[in-house]
Image (cartoon, rainbow, N blue to C red):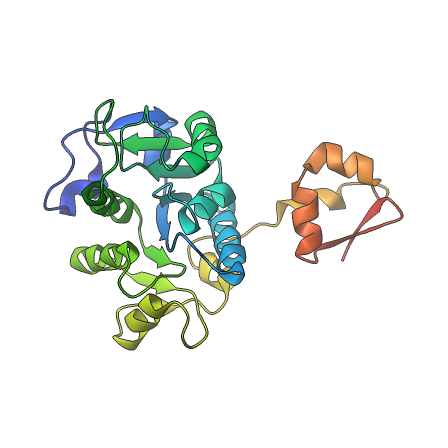
Length: 250
């Protein structure tokens, strides 16, 4: 159990106690909160993964709520540097569709909850959970949100706490919640993910660096042994090219 967290000092009703599973040392790291809709569009999915991976690469821990959609992507991109704040007790996997992800967070990251065993999530507990998600992060990043969504309550909490809010750019008619935040001057726009994250710390492209240490161009098999699935992520991002079962830097 966790009894005292510095970031909760500004909360009107801080949790009296927190239950935890995982690496509690993550609470001593620098943190950002990333939240958003449970049904993100493809662009939001890609951007959320890139954001969370970038923050993890500079030593930040990404905090989110373990829900479907943006929350899950934020955790996936930042593992093992991620904290999931649950709206139910830690002995319950909710949402069920995220069980494998939650189990992975228990093993590699950190999950916390203010609810004792056998406590199911309720509509109210999600709202209460949001205040912890927002409180832990230096800033709040909203990837995508409808105007009347629970995510917008997180924005209200951030404003009450005096935390800066950042949002991704969207087309007209999309993500009306974040568009409203921009219109009202309550949020700032992230126009370039790498430049934005570099304001918090230096982004190091470790995969590119490690490829430079190969004396010869690695075979696909050699690269897969060393880098695993990350290899294909870099291929999709255009950083490497796989030709004739060999890997080349672009």
